[in-house]
Image (cartoon, rainbow, N blue to C red; front, top):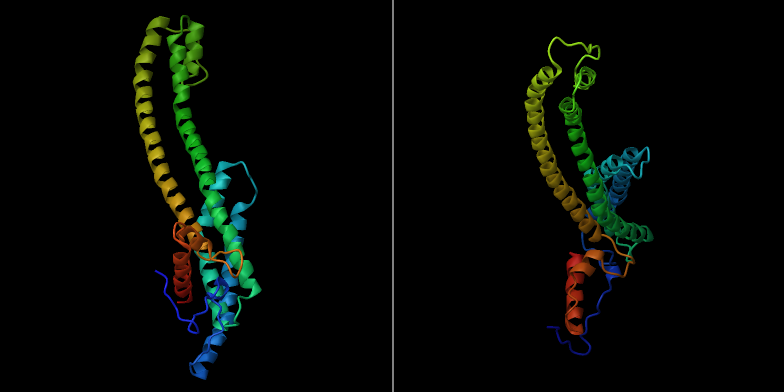
Length: 283
């Protein structure tokens, strides 16, 4: 319930622009204050250096550009997810440095960086369906490669079943994987007998290969689902982390505050919630 205040004792409600950058009186010793002020520039430079390293790593992974290549898309998304701690740590260091300056208002550079965080949040959200699509394409490609390993044997077996004369038997034997191409069409035994013996030798081997292929394909699907869940979770948590930093203007709540802010409260309770969020942001 909102608190009732007496006239003359009303507390001013601070806007979101003062959440992190308030001009407060500092009662600490001068030496300690100077030490903290000396940390401002190093923190900012370390933050920008981390952002530069991250941008260079992602740029290197993105070249050459292959926008419709699932392997390229998966590689770029993996590079972005794998180094996401760099920009997050960089933003935290930059915000800490800006807070230690205590300029009273949020610096324009910080406002632009936090606006950039909002766009980064959207990028991670859009990355989720993109990496699902590219991952499914890579799964299909891996399955096709496994199926292609048994296709020559299947074609040779079908050719043997269709054999009726020496020339057809010669062509069928040449199509067997690993068979010598220099095979004569003159045989010491009847064509039918040779055909049946080859079928009896090849068919069990082909069935064994098919069983192995099914096991490999099952493993590919299982591992891909695990990887997909992990990558999706990482992209989602990255989006939430940047949403906690990003906002459109200095006097607006962050994206995460907009998501978790109750919408079914009465106006007075919403004001109380805003004051509670304001107090937590200052801590």
